[in-house]
Image (cartoon, rainbow, N blue to C red; front, top):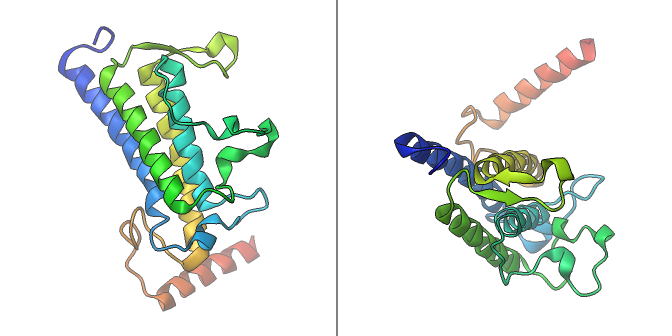
Length: 201
């Protein structure tokens, strides 16, 4: 690598890739055990839903690690569907013709394309983000790795909350793997304590 040389550059790239993979895995894991209806159902006033979060993350990786570094793919962008309108928000939900299996396969293909780009390029490899303002368009692979990992971390948090609202499922990847090992009574008492504090404020 020209900008990040030797072992330090390899270590930095590896860390960035690990962060990206960790955040990317969350929306997939939060779909485990759900029905199509549960995965699709909007849970917020702006329509946020678990299957849409996965589709969005996959589409973003396809763009940032494909278009930005001039590495085209045969995979279709949701907003390029025939008759699509830019205001349709098609990257944020699965359409009637797209099943959960379809979305999981699409995500795997997008992530594989992204990983191939990351593997082939150095951290200081130049790219250009055509949908960013002109003065910010020129980027490096290192910048984009950080940008996408941070964006997907936000969506991983969304996915955590949506899954808890669906069936109480909590934890980083599986039930309770980064939360206190409390039973329902203890959790209820904890929530009541927070409510009392809030009401006194």
